[in-house]
Image (cartoon, rainbow, N blue to C red; front, side, top):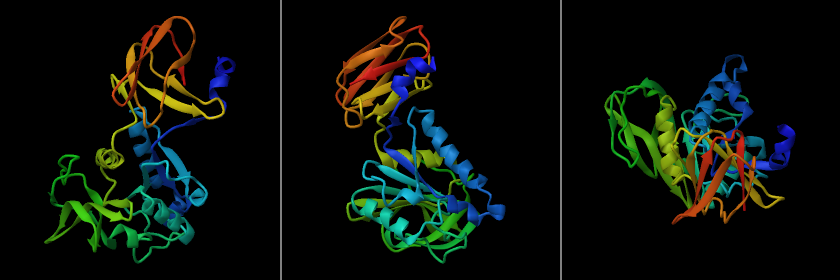
Length: 296
């Protein structure tokens, strides 16, 4: 089986409009340099989008200065910390060039040795300044296009004060209101701040709102696929992880696909392509297992 599909795996890369910026130095802020609290948060975000057939890329902070960041709609920093001055500057360039950065929880709050900073490492583009972290809040104020948010479950909330940008949601700390979700425009881009990562569903909703329309939608939603790109062969490979009949809508802006080149296996099922207003709809039917579609 592996040998038969090997040509569709070689040189293939996932294609995603989103990425998590990962820094190994984040673990130095925890006792025994334990990376588990950090990895747990990253995995929850990744799993939420994988369940929707949208893999997130991981970008090592060490590679920020040499990676092409402009292809990503959004870069997410969930607790990510310990970045150097050069790494922070790479993120500033990304934002100023039109990118969206999401700083979440106590991200950018520690130096490369795990020692706490007086302020966020990117406070100048966040439009916010760190004050303290509190265990919980009593109230959420404001409304946004992502829907309502309940105060219950909002734990370890980072309290900030703002000097620029817009607070879309606020939380109350005693008699003082502070941002729960804040967005600051910087040149062509923006930096968003989410004050807690305690509610994974909220984090997912915020990323959704900031990233805009998703590039792939599967119907029914419980069916799973992964779209990869083989640059050398100039083709996309749609891996059908779920059996049965379903449809996959792919945005033309994400992958300008024109036709089905071939199927694997080539018997026992069928695949048709329909044009939509913004892209294509791939319809698959049949009982064959371990299927993939080669698209051009």
